[in-house]
Image 1 (cartoon, rainbow over the protein chains, first blue to last red):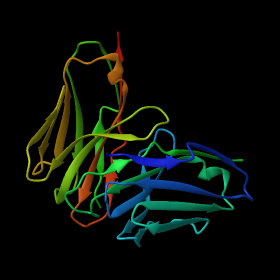
Image 2: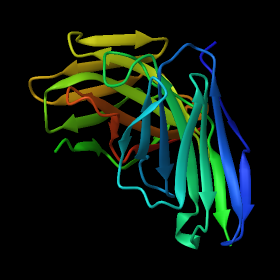
Image 3: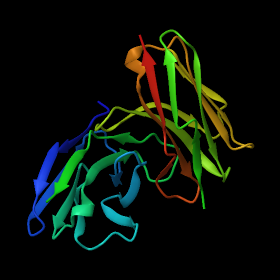
Image 4: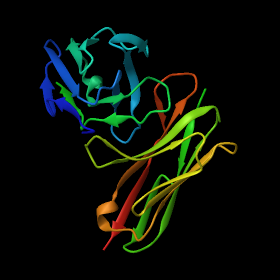
Length: 114
Length: 112
């Protein structure tokens, strides 16, 4: 099983809403990632968790708050977003961070901020 | 800072043609290079992973090569099919220990 599952697939939220994106993998991977992808652009790294601890935050605004409750789950909590935050949010996992391991991506959550 | 470039940005070919997608990177200190496929509005599907010590990997009609010293990789697609139409992304994993760094992709269109 090489599947990374993301929910929901689509999300529309107002600028005052609070919502969460969820990501799950059962491959025993110890590194999990959040990427943001705007239309016709490559994915851009937001956060990296290694062994359930935040190891990289790519200067992401505080309105995005990641959480790793256990080794299989990764959440991204959203609050007071702006319309320019509308994008495809991708979750990925790999066996370990930064080593010779393959990364697997989920199908993404298409977020629209209105 | 590692930079990944993919050429061409877009490619249109008739069904049955063999084709090559190119990827170059500026810092040769990589752990591995990975090729992905992305359909419109969808996530990324891993196609091939090449470790830094390897020269090439094959999967079905796909063959990826890596020349780390020159900072280049190619993805060869044999006997292209309309179902191969998608954006192909190249990404490298740096020895600095951060996550994947992506190129901007090549959008492939195969006509029947």
